Image: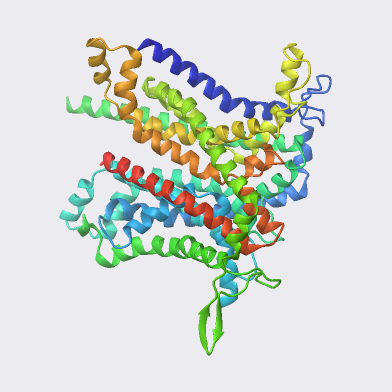
Length: 282
Length: 298
């Protein structure tokens, strides 16, 4: 077992270094004074000047605000639709359209985005031609596209959570005469609530970050943050983009650290409660 | 379990997501297929209707010219072959790096395992675009890697790494590595360690134990991880746009250029159809593996 152990551990360290080195370099050079992103200007660094440049750039701020609004709406609608999809696949057994739903859940996740983006735009154009809606493209068409690929992810997350639980709790409630809607609200929903929350966050992140599909379905007037960033970095590196990346990494990292702390305390409290209950029973 | 939900409820629970995905995912592909058979024209929308009225009846007018065009210009075949090659080799590289990583995580203690899994997933939660962008700063001729190598005296003039095949492979492996590690971990974590102990007791050497026990048991994980990397990598757009060669395009970029630069929607649709046909088998295969993995959970 040993040789395989050392080899795989070395590869794990190397792989994690590979994953984090670029992120680390983004962060370090966001505090660099020089315009040249890769040459460290030791005399005048670290500096927060690129953060000031970033946060006074009206185009970036407008795009970020649009992206936030689209991401909140997309994640919320996708969570509702994805929860329905996940419940259907995990709890309904055989139903008409099951194979179709399974297929349309996996496919958007792996489908190259250029294909999905083109297909959605052509749908919008055909719809406008046929029924006069949507009028051109913009925030609404972007949100509809984002909901569609985000709900696939939520479906998978909710489904795998439900598959892990057996149905005996739900069956017991049914046997005791609870209405199906009550069973869902009082038992199924609390069970899958963490999965729905995780799905919402994942959907928010995917919507916030999407470039390729958005480029196809965004109108000329509506530029999301990734679109603005892409047109900037296509022309070369720019230090204020490093500052933006650093802010995003900081938000994600503190969110994850925060949730880890909450989980840790909840776990400790439960352990204490279990001990106390045992003591009372004894 | 059918009795859990009332018949009306069943229809709603399954029907709403089905209807949504049918309209916004399935129908669009039918439209792509349709437009790939029509002719480009200078109008809004910039393609000719597929059905023309003849003697009061709608008659379909199918043009194969877009597909003929794809065949006649070697640019398209070369972009397609290059994309398949890049995706296949990147998938292999992800597997060679990701397998030992997943294995090490699956053998770690349970607290460490949570942290390690989080570390693999964390980049996935930060922007794809910005992570690819980070590599420009590292790989440029006056970038971080060249500066370090020059300072150490290992090289005397900067290496050309950006806008080469190398940078494309780095970018794709980097972006898709978590997609390989996570399904492999899910598979390896379930292995029964007593099998390996029994083999060791019977005198099997480490390599033999790996080749005869661990590897065969993890084939489903390898397949799922590889497909999750390969399928989207074929149509990758951001990595080749930011890091890739300018003299050799990938097919995702070709599709997008046909659409945005040449405004030739029918040819762009035909490119999409060709990609879809090629990726259909891998997508169906992936679905089979995922269904099996879910059934194993039950």
